[in-house]
Length: 145
Image (cartoon, rainbow, N blue to C red):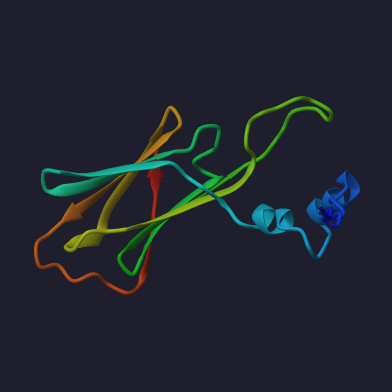
């Protein structure tokens, strides 16, 4: 009876993984994630003659850290949350850039959009007019508090 030997495959060491996960490494996927905005949680539904979209964006200043626009039939929300706590603190909060795009239903009127921000929730209401053609231009939406 002969004994078959299986060649040993060297396993990655922690240092190999650390190099691959180092944000400056060309092998890293971490630095690509840091550049992309995180998605904003959203809920959306028809409401009578309009369409409501609610975004969960707590801890932002709606005047300076939040932007809402309609671009070619798509509602676009962008937010920025910065960390103002002292250096060396422990935090599980997420900071940085956040964004979400929502394709609007047919008949959405980009010129009749309202937005309010209360208690960390941005609510955007878009009027729906049957047969309305969506414009290709960009419409910035003012946020009421």
